[in-house]
Length: 234
Image 1 (cartoon, one colour):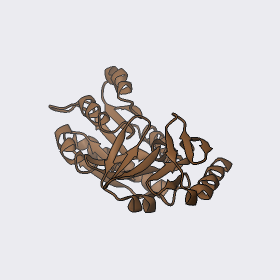
Image 2 (cartoon, helix red, strand yellow):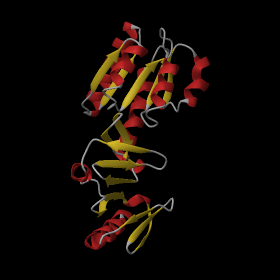
Image 3 (spheres, one colour):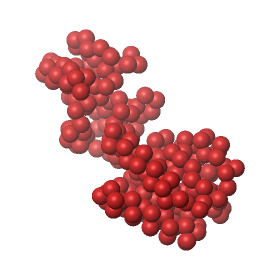
Image 4 (spheres, rainbow, N blue to C red):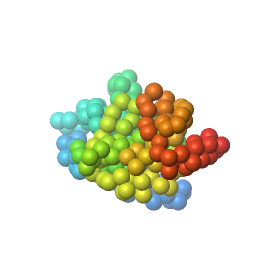
């Protein structure tokens, strides 16, 4: 589990590190924690590494405060969990505006932090996170957010409900990466689809929940039907 802490108070950083270590040991979870002392420092590193399971942001920092940092992050990643820590409750409403996972007041109580981490841990177990290398940087998505991947010319395009990402991987690499997840099936040499978003299978196509249509090749018919049935059987 990878966590980033962005806080300009050394004492607060040390306390969070201590509590996170205790939680990880109690739950037998391996943690990798990156520490940042300003929003600017985090943004600089974020451009190259967005593979985090949780961001812990202080709100009252220097030039770029935690709310501004969170808004910047949300423009690029709608899903990454953000936990705010602050000494003032006046920011709570703003925290919800950027879809914060939770909001903890200083001084941080260990039990309250543990409760947030437990909640996050349960969610992560239920919903695996996938990391893709796209043209504009790393993209982290829950498995359910991925609708399908299309191989087009020399590129692969990943589609969600509202967005699309040009990936730096070949279709073969994507198929290998997603092979362990039962909801993904290759329906055509140019398409890999998430069966949870298939509404209907009508030869030679699958119709998705939003009415998009993808082709199904003859050689893939049996596998698509099997994957669709197995997924909904649980």
